[in-house]
Length: 270
Image 1 (cartoon, rainbow, N blue to C red):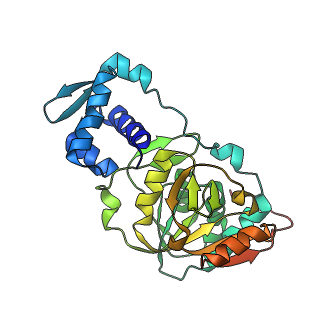
Image 2: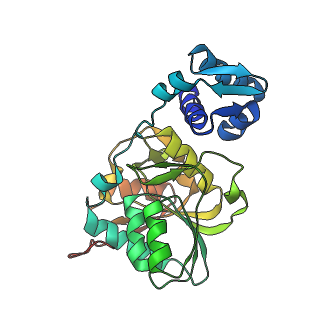
């Protein structure tokens, strides 16, 4: 993880908790104790925190002004929700068809994965998700069991972002994870925000197989943070508008690619 990514994660955690121990920083970023102490020192040098025994304590007004929740570096949920809706629904339908009764699955937050909601009405699954609109739908409209990670809520993206490795989901074990992303490229599954990338990588550890949901627009180059390489992707579902060079890239990487036809007429799930 790059230093800039670590710094953003540590600042956000301090904003949430008010105090971070060196052990907290190590757990959240995966760095050594020496690197964690340097990260803590940078917060103190910037005037955002006081060094205290074992960690750092946020300085009230200075930190509050600096850390008013910044928007994540990705499009809002509402802005993305109706883009390519016909393709997203067809992809989501096919994704749900991959589930078997009683399956344990993970669904990351995103507008394509949210479209799975309508097709999960009559399933009986155990679902871990960091999407609170999806969780709300599943709780009220289905009989699926629902689990949520701990973390901070980002309203624009309607995500629960949980960068900690030692929270309640560390013992969760799923057969499948369904993931959307900002883009797909030769380096793998790409995101645009370090907090989202970190949280998704953590969710990915809980699943045996990864299924990526990506409409044709997701093969344009966007974002710069690799969540995982293509070698980690078991299958990718896209629509028939996907560029031939993208399909060739996936085939060369050994990714099972499933192509669906966009729905001609659709209504969004409630």
